[in-house]
View 1 (cartoon, rainbow, N blue to C red):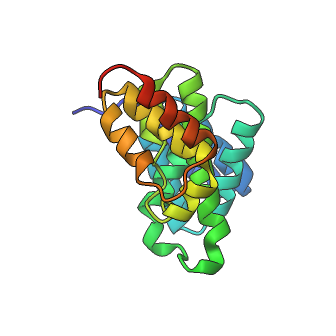
View 2 (spheres, helix red, strand yellow):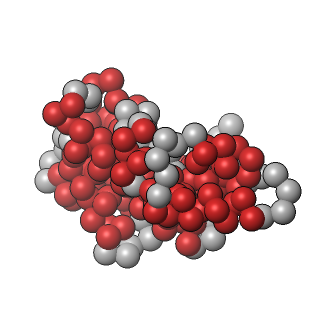
Length: 191
């Protein structure tokens, strides 16, 4: 399989120039690269992380800020989430880092929601559980019912309505958007 030459050239230029730039300029270069190829941008972010040029927290914050401004930067958010998943074993996973991991989950939600609202369901599906598994726990989904609901909506639209219903029914305490989603899924014809 041939890789597109333009994203590889952009990444090569970025790697050459980024080693001399500040982290924000480097992250912006990866954001530009992600517009044409998420995987190439993720590879660059992984290399920059391993070379101590970019931190996971800086990348996470930069991607979140772009989405919060309303920029359509779901591909960059996906690249950041892919990078975090790839280096997850090099990141702290203890309870004292719970806020960081919660932010990873929120970036996955925000990016998936943005893509879903733009009617890019395939992309939303690729983002909704991105960023590794560390943040995906019962406490997170009970706290952020919007994310649980969105996952179930996407699952139902992808033909997995029964699985989406079972996912929500398995929660020990269901309220908010997830409870509303479950009620709507149950009302749909068929199971």
